[in-house]
Length: 382
Image (cartoon, rainbow, N blue to C red; front, side):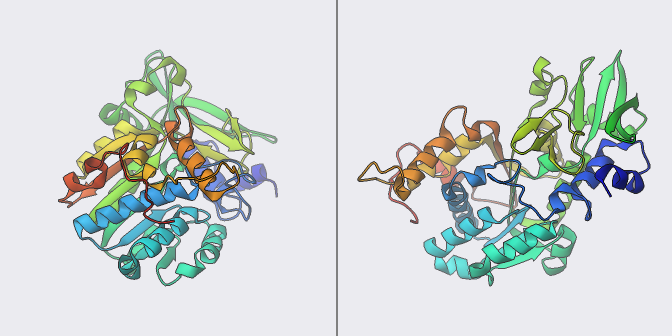
């Protein structure tokens, strides 16, 4: 059965974009993320910062270890959407080689909805199997860890949440629905009748101008609520790409940010390849931050990824290469560090948001006390 026929049987069209994305991306039978095939890296549909070099993960690990020691919290790290496990592996490697006493007490909790990726994770994390627990959902994880103390981490998670889509014409709000015919999936635009959407715009913005389209990520709010309920003490570290409300109101954003990624190509029409491509939209950072404040989370920092990596000690991983062999590990690592902070490079599109809960040593974190440009280049871990 092809994807369109499956969608027709699964959904009572027309449906919201959120309903369509939930099936197209997450359905157990045809969902893009659930399929037994590579989705990331050269053989997949898109790259992430995880694919640049392990130094990306090590820099975050250095930050995590510093927070765990300063706050004297349990060395528990929970990663949402761990994918193929590159981030988890390199963080665990760093802890093992840097502070074995902390490593022996670690619990690396993974929440990954894809059975295909859970199998990959078991394989790549085999040497750390005593430290790792893998769950299919937050609900399942809560059965083993009713109240979490530690660090909750996600990288490009929220941008893949299903969203509702609205647009404004002649001062009237409309919702973009999804319908199907025999050969294609298409948009249908109807007057918006859902108070949740108008309420979101009233509370979180943006103030849509006429002719503008916008994605409302209701699932982001629900995720933050559940994460906050679960976390007793520690940090929520969110890495993703997004816009402020001011940026969303610029002319170049008038068509919204919902896009597809297919074989490393940006697809403007997110309905073009049903269940065969990634679908993503930019985070509304003003809403994310306001919801976090409503939940009494404390914003510790919010900045571009390149600046965060610098403050977290990226330059401590620079190696003094004695030769210029471009195939040497030292050369590759130094080039990776350069690429992560190069203006206009991969980090320029991402932001890092860190929220704290019942934390008391924030001012002593090394991201606020070290000079990132005058660090001893001796590595924490080679």
